[in-house]
Length: 257
Image 1 (cartoon, rainbow, N blue to C red):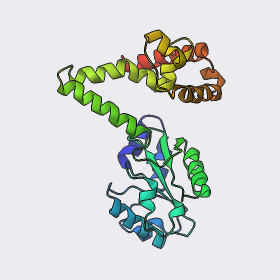
Image 2 (cartoon, rainbow, N blue to C red):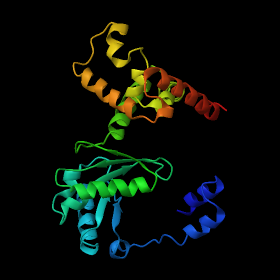
Image 3 (cartoon, helix red, strand yellow):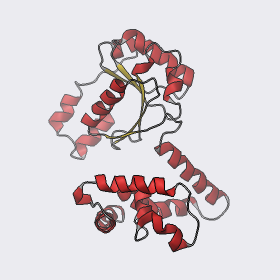
Image 4 (cartoon, helix red, strand yellow):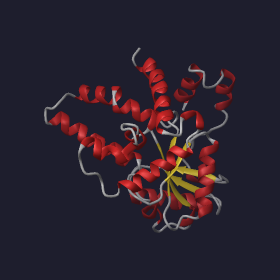
């Protein structure tokens, strides 16, 4: 904790006065009861072992207020798995941050059918008020969005190196200086949509291949994403492409120094 707060102060994210005040805003304890009593919101971040997590959640429930929300940072277990055998499953939600969690804003929220709407809405509000970018999954699945994509990329990257196609340095340089840089600005699907005039709907014609039979569902979702973007970041193919290029210039200035 001290290292993180020092990092914030050294990089202008807080003043020295705020740094000193922060030391009084948290405490460390080995007692679950002491940690959760009278807390409206609890973040459970125990080891990735399902029975250990369930036992910890039950212990939290024993000492926390009846309305306390318990958010688990589990990476791979589903919300339904965590809720088995607990006292108040409707108050359990999965809330997955990304390392380094003190810098990256993403929080992936995931509920089961048992999780109450109040729990989901309150958790979303809690994280958004902390300045987090909250994404709410529509299904209770193992791995969330980010881990599922990241693990697929990792497997491909490992195979490329193991098969002698390239070195680890080549893989990382390729990602950082190519697709990874674009994805940092416009994600994956929106990036691919910008790759062809007319978007993903025209990829098959451009590259002479058959597309996924469910492509139109994806394209409709991309259309919704584009329409909901802040106007300054563009809302059509041309304006979003210009925003991407301007932002890539700034990113390249930082990473290529």
